[in-house]
Image 1 (spheres, rainbow, N blue to C red):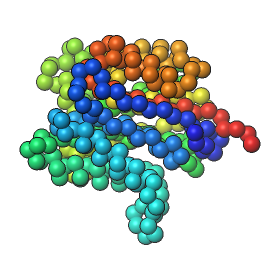
Image 2: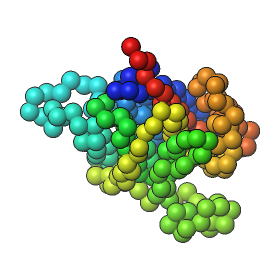
Image 3: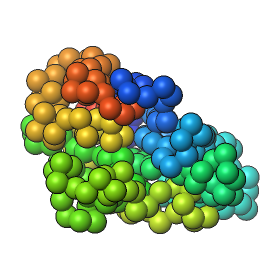
Image 4: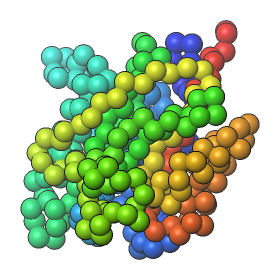
Length: 256
């Protein structure tokens, strides 16, 4: 649990291998005290793609937890600058290794949700690929990010109508170039908001309407149980990919 101005932030995350994979290519990061939450999904590198997603969360954790040396680019501690710096470091590290035959062009999607400690009502996301961030407010689930994918490129929402060679196409990713092109989304935050970050192993198995129903039915239920319910539902629907979920709840801080 973390306190930012008048908000109290609680979070839970979990990653599940699913029913069709022998390894987990997803990674997650929760830095509650810093207000940083991330889901990354390794792509393109076969059995080595988990290295890419782990590099993403490793660089983010280092940027937000390592002491800032005076006079360095991290000295100002601006959250957005730190996140961009970390993701570009990860992209360069991955890209350098992606050309090796054993790594077969590995890369990673990323979605990061960041609350500013001094102004938590104005959060933001940075993302590349098709890992997502949603906000549940007053019972309505809103997708805050836009997939960088073949489906989005074609303007098709239902995967059954997407040509097979476009179904797993990612148009942006960490590691596909030395610097990653990130999309930024400004996010306003209110008491009662619930944020969901996930890899596509969740939303490919469950339509947004079902995700919303599960979250709304779980009001008052502890966050870990709600995360487990989402993952169980995705596995029950086939579990064709790794499933990673982070829930971030925003409530009013104690008056003390």
